[in-house]
Structure formats: C-alpha cells, structure tokens
Image (cartoon, rainbow, N blue to C red; front, side, top):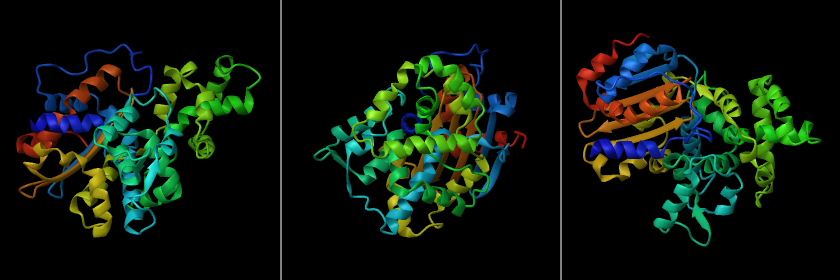
Length: 382
C-alpha cells in the first residue's frame, strides 16, 4: 500500500516527456530482472556512473555522495526553487495565496500536446474537487499544480507573478553556488519559432528548420536564455493564445529539437539539492510563516492517508524528459528519522529511463527504511 501510494504521488510530479517519446534509440537491456527494484537502480549506477549522480543523507549524515558535485540537468525538479519563492513572498505579504486567478491567465502559457497531459489532469482535479469558481482558481492551487501535477503553464505564470529575478535570488540565498540561472525553460520550446519570425519568415518554418537548428546549436546558454525570455515577454500579454496558435509547434517540433532542449536544461548538483531538502525537512531555515505556505505545496504526498501512517512529513519533486530523470525528496518518519535524497540521471536511453522510473519508488522506500540497503549504497564511488 505504502509503496503504491508513494509511487502514485511520484509519477504525478514528473515533468512528462515532450512529444516524440515513442521515437526510441536502440538500447541494450539496462537492468537485470532478477534483482529487486532498488538494487537494480544501484547496479545501474555502478555500471553507468557517468550517467548518474546521487546523494543520500540520513539523520544528518551522508550515506553516499556519488558524483555529487557534477552539474546535471534538473528538468522539473527545479520547480522546488519556484515553490520556495512563492512561500517566501506569501509570508511577506507580497502575494496572497487566496487570490483568485483566472484560468485564462494560465492558458496563455499552455503549449498544446507537449506536457504529457499534465495541465489537463490538473484541471480535471480542480473540477473533481470543486476548486474552480467562476473560471478562477486560488494562487495556492496554481502553486500546488506546479508541484503535484508538474504543470509547466503554472510554472511560467508563477515566474511572471514572482519575478524571475526573485526566483534566482532564492537559490543564491540557499547557497547554491553551482546552480545555473532559472529562466522560462518550458517556453524555450518556442525558440525555433521566434528565430524563424526574426530571420527566416520569407520561407516556411519547415523549409527554414535546418538553418534554425544550426543557429540554435551555435547559441551559448546565455543566448538561449535570452531567446526564451523574449518568448516569455510576448506571452505575458497574449491572453487569446494567438502566439502559440500561430507557432503551431506540432507541425515542426521533432526529436532533434527535443535533444537540444534537453541538453540545455537548467543544471545543478545533487549535493546542492540535498542541502535544500535538509532545510525543508528541518523546518528551521525559514520563518514559521514561510513553512506555513510551503508545506501545502511541497508536501502534497502527505495528503494520502497511507503515508500518514508512518511519516510525520515528506516532500518530493521529480522531473523527466526522454533523456533525463531527476528527483529530490525529504522525509521525517514517526520515529524522527530524517532522510534527504537527490538522484539525477542524464543521457539515458528511453528504455533505461522507463526502467529506472519503474523502480525509483522502491529505491526511495528502501533508502528510508532499510539499514542494510543504505550500507550497500556506500559501495558507490564518490
């Protein structure tokens, strides 16, 4: 029961792979079936150290630090920083969590068919629980949708409301010195269209795509961020979704672009994200008022009765693309034992990604509950 409950909450929080996930690379078997799920992940890390990074802290002591300082793409795990910024501003009275937000404000950032159905699932959740009033939803529910359903549109809206500068200030305040700047990463999917409009509109976007891709490959990360911010600035005022409709992303987005965006995701380290998990777990780094607003957003996993039976509190966020799998979580059990974990994978084949996702929930549970398994983790090289 607990295993399934934790798993359901985990999968709901993943950034769903963008389109063309069915275009799989040829892959050899990633994990042997005879091992249990948790050990399969451990064995995968041992055999593929260059694809992985892991830090586990248990009761304040590091159990394992495997490539802990290696910069790795975060995918949707970066939304933790947005959630913390939301709570900080709510505590200071800069935003009101009860403010009613028109759903049309979120729609302007929704890119059709490239979120794996996350936005539709969140909207259905709102309807099922009667949380929509006259076409509006509370700001708190927007933040909860960003974490619990990994809504990308909600994330971009919160970037608008909180300000990207303030979100970046949050990770600096947390001492995340290696963390790359946060920018409207989901809207970067529309950079090819913006390049086409700027340079190549005398031909169709399909005809211009080789030149667009060449231009994108030569971009620095700073240039990539600037282009994404240019798209963001236009969508902020595009309540009729004209820009996204005209972009018609489904007509030109392909697996090559998918890989480019995956390679340019915001990066940080497992060491840095475990340090954040510890701060959230201990509930002493920020003011009590900040945690008051953060807990409902980050700890939605505790709304499930099964987890309340053995955990005092826990929070989790994961992320995934076709090539990336990331997760960071914290938990304190009823005996007071504190766990913080960050596990990042990159350059995965689709088969490897699928198998790792299938076993990640069991891995988490074994880390929290099995002393022998924690000993086995110590065999991983730093």
